[in-house]
Length: 380
Ligand SMILES: *Cc1c(COP(=O)(O)O)cnc(C)c1O
Picture 1 (cartoon, protein in one colour):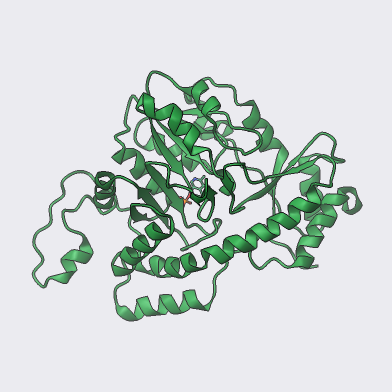
Picture 2: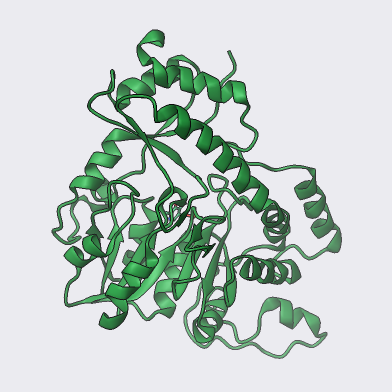
């Protein structure tokens, strides 16, 4: 029996040809292709400005820097997320304050954020977990009057929509990931999108050592003027190699999302008939790209989450435990992260698992997964 993987990037000859072109051009670092990728990404996401970065974690870091978040500030984050979400406030010396999530979407809500607000809250990082759009309008209605910046962590959400438009549009600033675990990949890579010109300009500079003129611009002239470093910056650049792959991947995004939604719908139809299982679904305000297709193993199901993981493994099917809870990790165990109860987070992280879903998945592979879901004891 061949193994069914949980995820496989969708890459092909077009990406290979695009890479060969970059290598032949002799310019492989951040340059014209990064600029072209930024423009294409901004257009496709209806963003005013896009700044490419080395990954989403660095994009989140830059987002908090340009938003002016620093020591003494509190930033509300979901514990129910990849740990980079919680680490970003820590990088700028702020305190991540964990808020609980909604059990249906796995996302923050205005209600859960409100419980975590303090007199020092200056920002919220709202995640579109697994591609499910967060209700960003409700969060902004809570945060805007209080002067709290909402940063959207759209790492998983390229191709997801909120009220008929791409996610990220309704946040002042959003961060994206192009890690192979996400739908659109550049190997490693990230993007910052924002509606604010001043934030985009500062992020663009900070990602390149806060240099007064970019390396690409300096290369244009034979005798480059001396550069100046106006503040302490970072090296968070994307390369033209990555951007060339990103341009190909971006053009494929609609097809990639359509295929994932088709596979997700086929899962949802079957899982809806299995007592004790619940599958992730679109919320009323938008559509998911189903970057992660998770199911919750409820009390009426014949086995628990670990039992289902074991059954899938016995059938050579690779699943993953659900989204992590950052507050349970040793890195945060001894830190002050606010005192909010995280019951829903703990339930979801213990009771959910992520099923295989990838572009090239065949009907027979999906049928194998569904067979195990229907009768997990048959393979144990
Ligand atoms: C993957 C992920 C990140 C980190 O993205 P990188 O590009 O790997 O740095 C951040 N937040 C969330 C919610 C993610 O899923």
